[in-house]
Image 1 (tube, rainbow, N blue to C red):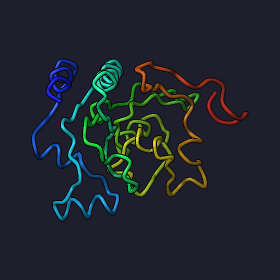
Image 2 (image 1 turned 90 degrees about the vertical axis):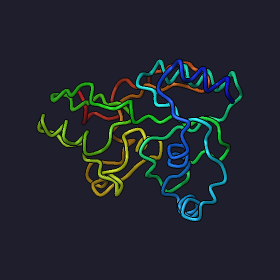
Image 3 (image 1 turned 180 degrees about the vertical axis):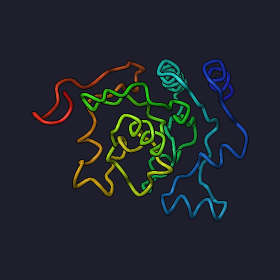
Length: 194
């Protein structure tokens, strides 16, 4: 594990402190919370990596593949399904440093946002342009855009604005082999983004 930790240290900020590892070993999944409260977490990650660019994410993914090391991607860790619990240890890739609103096109309603952006930060940014995200899951204050997409999020206004998959126009994604793809194109219907 030391070899991959050294490699990750050259890519982005990392942490191997006990507090950070313990914090990144749980989300709000009831079983994970029980483990945490009873100090019986089955597996801690060995390292938490906090990239701030797509290229750093790509390099982390490639390093994990080269070293045959488990990789768990997290952000707000507000989920209740255990998806961000590193059950096999390894590396936790924390996307909360990949945050911010890149652009807001008021005419089309298209917003380019990074995955580690928390709900309130995104909503404030689009409100400045007279828009709303319209996506308000119960975890809004402690969840991120990437988490919404990864978990197929829905919220209080889903009957009006749709679920998160109804709102996404395109994605930039780092695949398990380190390749970066961009999805998207024309809208799925005649109404919505121009």
